[in-house]
Image 1: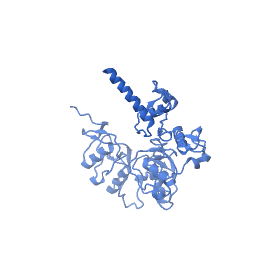
Image 2: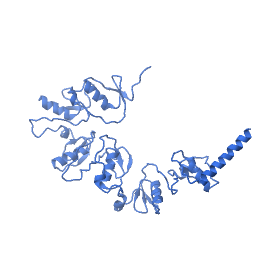
Image 3: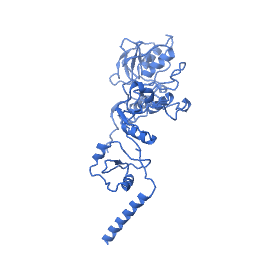
Image 4: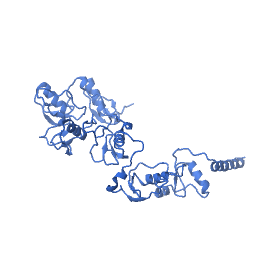
Length: 375
């Protein structure tokens, strides 16, 4: 009985394999890689079996690292035999066509799909004189009207292949579309700390950027003033029609002024609002303020002489009481849970401070991560 079952299974397997070779039906795109003895990593078993139809001696390799050593990025596709997908690791190579590709796999895939022979000329980006070829025109971006006009204000910085840092992937795509160039994400995080001002109206000489990311990454301007971030500097320069550039990262010397806390042109008028950026400072009155701008505004409204004693909270003192309407109304929706001193878990530190402010209670970060509840 067992012999009969074994024979039946073998026969059914041979029939199934024969049907697969004879059938023109494609394979699914499920990624469950199989390493062959030919040194090729197939995306799944179906594609491996199809390859075996033309190479009966092909078998599953026992040493799976051989595929990675020979073809670290190869995944064969059923369509034209071209590589179906490539890894997202940015290892630029210069092709014989003068174009820069994000990695060797992308070069081979483009060459196969276009039916044009392109070989790797050299590792790294193509020479600067071929920059116009390196920045390939996006086929689906014939007009700025087709570009995304707005991006969500979440700061999740990415480094583009053009060497600029963007607030998030959306602003990268927005800028690439407006400029009609091909820009990809090289890696998450900033490139060198310099923020790219990405706004469709930014290039217009008569229109300034409408807003900047709500992130505190201070830079010192050539005018000796400290700005919340590079975007804020450009916005200030544009609105006031002055020539200001970034002198260096970080705050200017203590003797210089902070643009966020700069007094208004009319000394009798106090600022009506401040950026919703939480960068706590301790005042000389022993109170903690949300940022330096808030300190200056409160000092102006109450006609008192208060300066910044130092950055950070005043040794755990309760931040200055403000009306609920002045509490931060929005936080960056990034999940970086923190455990509050009230035993509650918050999505991130901003949500903790916003909740504490709206309830007029004192809550500090007990530790990073979720609170541990004893059963």
